[in-house]
Length: 182
Image (tube, rainbow, N blue to C red; front, side):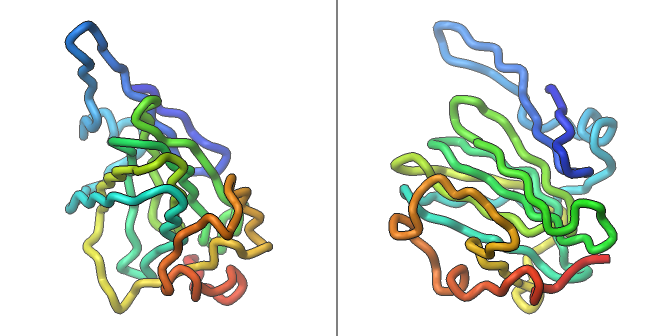
């Protein structure tokens, strides 16, 4: 796999080596020893999967404090714009974000460390999104930042009128009012 450090420290884009022939393809999606050498010692405890249709925006979610989660995300079917927002107050990139296109075609993965909010927007008719986390879900620690906070300046590639959002995502707080990590 090819590990590419993004412009925000700790956030990585991972490109697998895909071996394709007339039968289809084969690729490794996770190799613990290699991951540890490239990114660090992250112990994933759970895999999650979601299915969404065009325009669904899930995020920007995170868990506060000791319940924070690192995530390794990828798309099995379709295409999404995936976004990670740095909530680490001590970071020189606090409040900045990284956006990447993840799709079944490019087979890229995106690693988001603890201390970040995360979200994605579905750009295909349907998307199946899967991810590993290094901490269990804790409903009491759940938080959400508004996807359209002008301070973040995220360039979502479709109009808000086309977006499908949950009430939780519509009622997220501004970055300035959000919980921050040290």
